[in-house]
Image 1 (cartoon, rainbow, N blue to C red):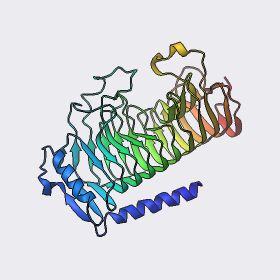
Image 2: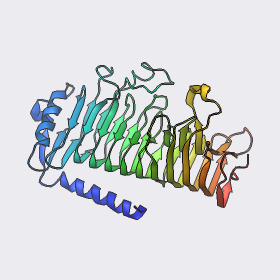
Image 3: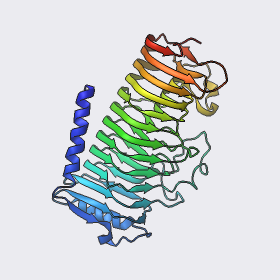
Length: 395
């Protein structure tokens, strides 16, 4: 599917689902189910969702203005008709992460068709007291809940909402088809652990646009099986940038392909755009990945392919064993701005090398004093066109 066709499809989905939840829509207000401000509304939301999901016409669960406390919610389909979750106020999680099984969400949406989440309100994960308290820095902290988990959704729109201070990932998405994020704001402090903004896996036809993501980890992380993803007009930072991967850690990972990152801005991030695969990884494929028209503002490494990814030295026993993820058809075009380290371009490829890598119109400036701006390359011979600073693979 081409870029223009994907744009048209995303716009059509957004318009259709927005209309669906505003015309002839039955509203299920949680206050009609006994919800009160600053009180636990877990049962009220469960009951409102049950009735809305069974409604014979379009429906929505409505969270009015004010702060409501929520222990956890599991909101599942299939529903009889298109359904909305309108949040005008704030849902606040408990400060302690008790009663969650591995990988659970604080709020989970599962097996729903034509869901729209909107309303200008806030999902407050209340995570400050949890960061760094349950796991080592070298571990994925599965004991902590994701703010919003989305499992196997079709034709979904998330727009004009905020997610703040998640205990772990803000959004974790698996098995989605036709998904749009628009005008979403995601916020967590720079020193919060594993608070990825949006994590995608095994999903297709996804658009993320007009959004601001400020986290302590990847603004957007793209896992295996992600296909036809377009990210545009996202402001990222602080955080670790927009990352494809890490890939290759597990058996039977699915290919990643058809990724476009365009017209985005990165502010004070550790990476700009990055492809990362584990050292000594399993076999896998990632291809057709294109990054263009990007602004870097004081970014440590704006352009990165890292096929020797091994954070915190946890795989020293695999030293010298290359990644087996095959990377191909990759382009970096019209990327400008400033770096906070002297390595502006890092293309470190694995055992198969990186095939068909293109660099064009790279204009980066180093704002530090530790030498000159350079590039670092391994097992790759990129084709170069247009202005290049630093020169490609000069180191």
